[in-house]
Length: 383
Image 1 (cartoon, helix red, strand yellow):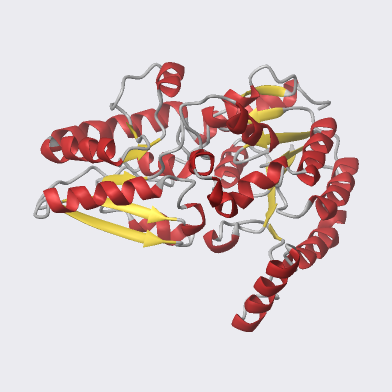
Image 2: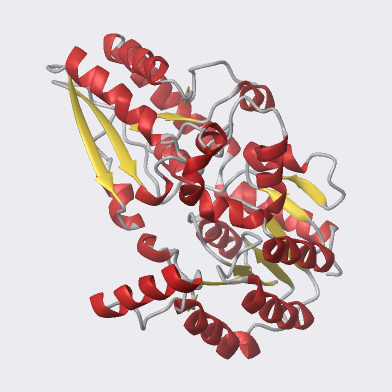
């Protein structure tokens, strides 16, 4: 089959592509590479006119005055120029409701053309969208990515990206996509839970991880235990990174001679995934029920990851607490206590490391996941 994957924010589509190609399919990815992360794409639609310091300053000034990103015009034109090539695919999948990362006024006309040229279009619920953000705002969850905003409305500007999905233009984009796609697939429990009982919802298919490309690194605990934290500054509050920083202050004072702490910020993907190779423990995110892509790749390497590992996730996969990953709660003392437990019981690091790799091989093997996508696509399309 010819398959077009639209958008790439985490390497999900790249790993899926690798699995599909091994199974004999022709696959292309169109996207921007997600700004500084620079994920590989086959058709690059990113802006190139605003790379200089002067152009960037002008872009920021225009955005501040008008709330419009002028770079979107270039991205729009890049997509429009490529549209004639984006036809006749057996399957098209959007990674998100904002797969092209354009204002709906620009994006809807492009999607209309794309949909008219391809019969079988599917949507991933992967990242913020209309359904999930409304769910987080209107349901009494223990916590969600919107917790800091709900607790302090003065942080609204920090959550502009998430809250845009409940504005009128993005609501229109959501309904347009739902009317014109064959169904929605969730990539993990954080998106599965909001979609329960939705007529368009097909199923949860876990994130695919290329276990051939990512080698298991058996932990070697010698002089110090190494703790790694990779910060995405734009998502600092949304990920709950402030709780990790507070916990690390406690740990650095308590175990000054037993730990080494590494922090990085806004690294491109290839640099990021290499930067934590020597680490034993990875601090990923707090406000999650399930693991995102960065956490899963770290687990595949055999790292002990502090991330979303809530009871709903344990129940879904039939796991016990603290055996595969550490559930990071929005409580710096709780995180510090879990870190202390691992530092004082280093044999647990070895045990969880091996369990984490086994879990990824069992539940996230990219070839098995690719087969599940193919099954769902074929069962809900005109192929």
